[in-house]
Image (cartoon, rainbow, N blue to C red; front, top):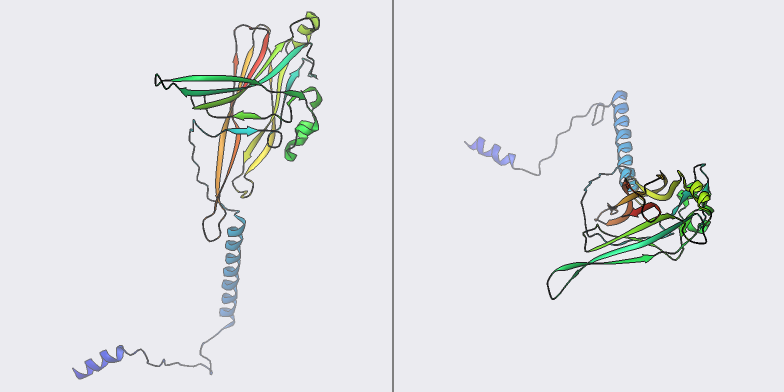
Length: 297
């Protein structure tokens, strides 16, 4: 009993000395093979640590969490020359771009609709407003997005219409939103005393093309500082002889939230618009000599 009690007490001793056995006056039995394995493991651990540090600071490998939401009341988005390049015009059947107001007229209007509450009846009504946007013959000053300039400047851009540099396009919401804004473009054959001969107008507009050049955005989630890469795009729609065409461009608002923090969370958000899809509708009969209408929503 006394021996068992003593063993138990010895087991509790935290100050006991370790007993070492030496081989050739060395505490460890080392070999060349063991040294090679140790160096190899050390190298692997160093490379792994460097790779982890590189990924951490460069954000080359990201975890993407994607959500798609329909937000009818998203904020107003302004498109101007400093963030959106845009030109529009007519190309004849020989693929020659021309800007001739004696043949056709092109107008762009800003449409705004608001749901307004009637305090007396408690019901909402839609207040609508149109505002004509100033146009000009395109110049190099209209194209300020460096990454996409080649697409625009390689065209016969002086025969296209561009927005005046002091104008901007405003897009917001959907039709039933509290505030809805879209852009409406209308192309009509010339009417009046200042127009060219009807035969000349008919010849120029017969099977002509509605040409639209604009900037879209690619989403690159691996680019932490600039996830939206601009890309130039163009679309062409041929006219009908006895019917007009309506082309709708539907934009979607993309929002990317990135964590820039190293130790603590640092969320930064980028918001851009890009084309979601296009829709073409052919009317049964021309109305008011309208050849094309186009809506940017």
